[in-house]
Length: 191
Image (cartoon, rainbow, N blue to C red; front, side, top):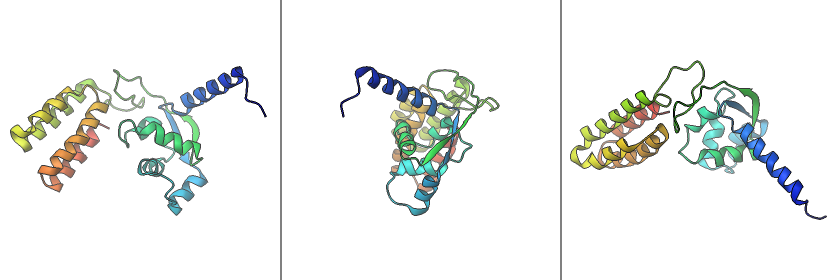
């Protein structure tokens, strides 16, 4: 059997690109397949932590946009694609209408959603300042470099990434309760 001609190969690549655009539509919702539910019940250890977390929270109601906030920046596409390729999830073919993001790096919100920190530059600026104030209050001058880094965050994705580092730094210097309170409070604000 010979190789597919270049034109066929280009057509196949174009079809895969089109599929990825459809499957990664921010408003698309997904459900677990029978195979996905069996994977969760059996814990075969075939999934890494990020893939398992996504599989657990996929419920047919959360959009791709909603799911992406449950993993670190840069981890979503690969984990989500793996679940699709393995047949653990499937599309509901329902696409929720989303408003356009207000600026690059800001999440699109559901049409009926109130603007929040992830979609409103004004609210984002307030949350960023609160995070900086929290660090400065708790760590004093030792926290100034962290505050500068927080203040340089331009959008919620950058702030989420920065806050993960802050969480580790704060966790090494303050109590576990303070660190957990920080994560719960600011994590919910930048989702």
